[in-house]
Length: 395
Image (cartoon, rainbow, N blue to C red; front, side):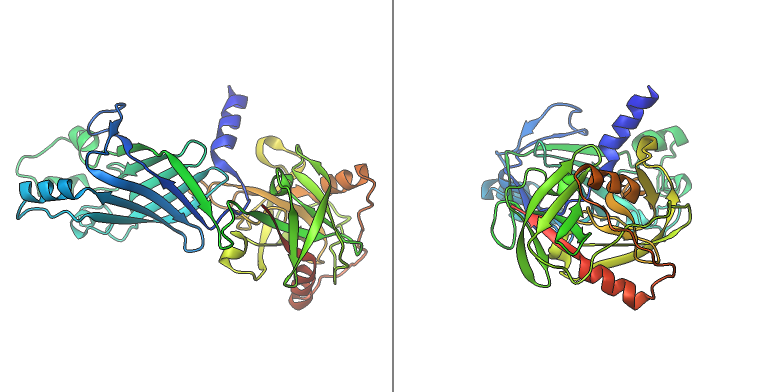
């Protein structure tokens, strides 16, 4: 049972850090069920709607829900609710993109209604009013209204505004109860700035002056034409070898890099200072290499994986395959995954350099070892990472 639970948690929480297309749309989302109406029955809303779209814009970090109502429905609604409510033909709602995995997108809207805020236990707390979970595998959308239920509302404040007092049990079960919309969409589309159907990307880095690079297997898996961008020039790369279990891939480009990253001879240690480089969200965020510092927090990864370390450096989609180095600029690990940010904080993983070295040796490549005994200053470390780390992508 314990093993099964671990597998379920992995499936729900760990994301492969692969940057995807800039814009994703789920269209014709007419079928929906609502727990206030019926817990399981799906209704077809075509009688009132011309179209319903969920649009995810990775570059702006926004999820937009667009509803276009039929004019006949709008006229009828406004007539029946004259002087009370007014409906527009088009309605828009925006959610903040908080998590973007290989198949699950999560967005949130925060509470802004002053009358509701006044009923919170802590009126200064930022509270999620709605959470949307978009599953790209089956084109479904789940919207949780008031996902925290009554947890953050004050029973005493609510009772003060009521003419008839309620019990605490009624407050928990009825007031601010979480309600769920389950929505089925008919189709989805992916677009990018280059108008291609789909572009996946990640990070890679040079390990020799002969043009060999390393990245994650999931960055290149299924790709027909892999490329790198090195100093604003695109190069075709060949996938020399891959290991699905370790999630590693060896690439070769016809280019002599300005620098490359050598391997550390030392075993990683807890609390060791490390630096990671990569392209979170690909080049849609910016084409400038992102560099972050942190520490190793554990010497095993998820489910006691001894080939990985756990660290606290922020890892986002697109960081996959990026180098994690020590203060000497030597490879300690390769960024591979992290736990979903809506549930955890600071739980990220990297493949140990010792496992990477074994992978290279099995493919008849000798990893270069560094004999440097002193730390690099910040400028030298940044220069090394910028001259050896690249944006890699495929279509």
